[in-house]
Image (tube, rainbow, N blue to C red; front, side):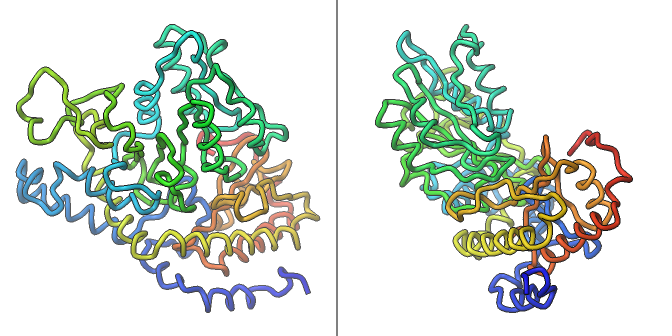
Length: 426
């Protein structure tokens, strides 16, 4: 009997022995929707609501005194949240800060580290990374008076899904100054060997940074142990910080003595910040790369969510995530391949992140049919439906129901009722 034929009974048995099953109740869930899009925007934890409401109440009661008379102190909120985040990424608290958004944080890092010379002037990227990284890097090249056609070095995927790490390392030639890669590919979910790539880059005198938007919160990271130079990531996907919540930045403590490439007053030494001197003196930690005044209401939900993450532990989250995606892939193999579906992500646990890339030539229409039939996925061109069962709030029974819904959509040809043109937001 195949895994699909064992039906909801097997899924219920797995739910019954799930050590994280109680955490599900700590989120706001819609009983009419199976939410499989937490890799784009995570659901709202009740703890995140509580921390946001507390900060709002502090502001209501205190006005400007909320900056310094709250616990934690809002003037140093980025340090408090950075410390809560540090354990998830294997860093010391002073190496992590919460600020701005992912793209601007990458701009800040490139502006800090990119010092092109006649010998080393190229920035190494891949052709599968989320495009915002490329936009930021090309912008920084132009600011230096360099053409991306000349100074941007790209490694192309062999299959359009994954990256060959040997090819990435082979491209680390003597003319490369900085390499920037994703830790997890946004479309296929491939998990790169960050430690290996970092070691290879440093052996060749190259600085290296990572976009970890699709990794942090789903996969354990060890930035300090791996000696990564810098990393940036958002907080509204797996970390459930809410729409547009402030992003995060890791900076290796080896670089604390550098001058921030995009300096601003919020990065100033704290006991002198309100002296308002014209000479910039940055804090000698990741917080020295802060720029403008932080967006407190966009940071507050993250406090509650990170406390939940630290209570559960990222290793337990990863363990359940792998079980959920293993089960989903087994169901796909058992029942959906006959309908033209295939799995586009790596199968090995050490090579995949937190979502399954379900491929089909009619992915756009099937994705829309899923939304109208109680499942919330997302589509990524050209043919991928991303399904992300989230360890903190997705059950094994829900995973089974998703595949059951797909079978019904295909049997009844419901997808034929939809346009093959994707919506504005996929």
